[in-house]
Length: 276
Image 1: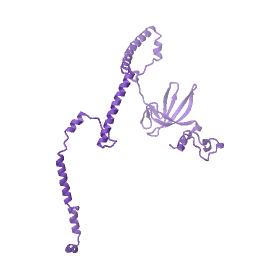
Image 2: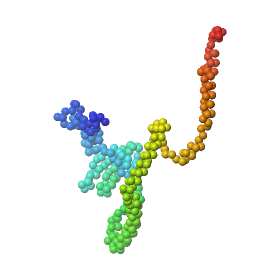
Image 3: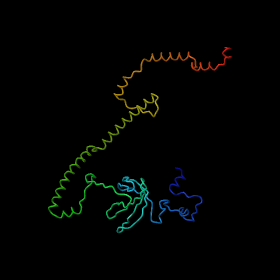
Image 4: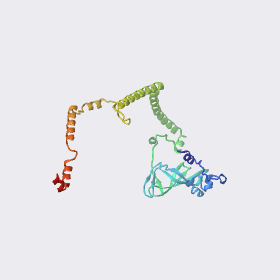
């Protein structure tokens, strides 16, 4: 990128007609610093890149909009939950131009599809998601009962024992692999030197054969050697004799084909044939 292009990309470029007395560049040109994104800023709407937080069914055509699909959405504040702002994101579906509105829900810490679409119902267990399942209000109230608390403590101890066995296995596996960093690094570098040496030897063979540098020779294998031993190219002397025979036949024949000679004779005039 040239210096001028870099300056323009960083918004540090000022054309010769710019007058510092008239204010900033945006003020002189009568535009907002966010350009097209702020075309509805007087209405409190700002265009942003919005990523769909979950899978949504489009109510216009029934198309499934996948989680993570990004849109140019209109962001607008529509209210507050205590001191937290509630935002509305309005976007156009790419399948049928259906308007979809998604709002934040600070109370439940989630997003809600208000119009234009419907959130796909998906349920996962804590085991499927591989996360810890938290107790709800009912389970927490049950812990006030001594018997329920003892039963819960027994279940926790059983789970803890199973998890401890898994952690011990992971620790032993890690120690077996990385118990000596210096020796592992030394072995790795030794293998890498051997690979580089083999690559250099094959590159020398390629140059000796006169092959292009884009051609990479592969390591030799017994399977390739056995397959090559069955290939027979014939007798080299017979090939040379056949080549000499065909060469003599070509030298003895006319450079014009028989069809071309016959066509030329047909085109000759009777007077020319009489003179010959």
